[in-house]
Image (cartoon, rainbow, N blue to C red):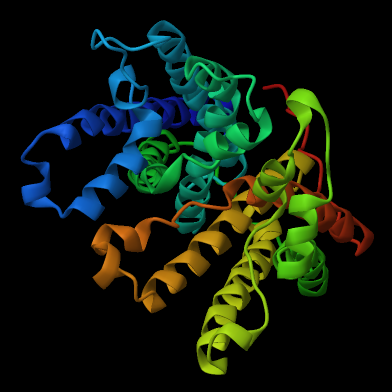
Length: 370
């Protein structure tokens, strides 16, 4: 799909996800009304407030009030939220544009386009939260205290609301993209040697497994948490490293029954299976296997695997009866920073393996003057 055709749905999607998350943030103030606990229980109200507060433009929902009822540093907080929403739009468009260009919703690619755009939405939200984090931390009045742990907490706060808003955004974006793709030249799917595709998928999945199997093991994760030290503003980087390096957390079955432990490990297997299958299909779905396209596709594949494993965790979670039904979705969307880190490396590894296995992307034919 040409850039001029892909630009319209990408801009529509960027505008929609920005409006949806702005609307979600505006709804956070309604949870402070007295009657909110008559609709939801107290635990559910608190959980919903935690979801929506990172996107609330009103400083009164996120900052402590002073004795006069006003908020401290409210202008700095509003600046942080302005940066957050502007960069959210920019990051979504920056990812959606090449995704729509390289995986257009034609020739049987529509489900793949939908899933890729959905997976990119929480990534764009995480990047927007990361960029705006310094202003948000400073608006709390304690920007020099434990900066890196605060930064880690802000980065991990985009929450399930970005996943739900991303699904609605992906649906509308694909509909608009199918309309704009009408009349364009057909873009048939590439024929990739099966062995090369499987080898590349295995290499990319192995990179993701380093985070999920090796780094996320309890003793290794504890070493990452505590072994790195610093001084001053750069002290205590453990929480931040965990955000960007760990896709999960696991230990031996000593603390639970073997059957329950295996059920949780099945979620990890599901994550790797989704990543492998997505990377297996990705070269044939792309109109051209360029490095940016493979990297974006691998990031989306990793996020999809992460979401699939979290849905399986939700199915076996038994805490809803204690903390309320909303709590079941509380882990949805966590781990996206690590998925971004290892998705980039996975895409590069898969592309290098694909090239070494003999798959060469044909160059576009030169235009013939009429």
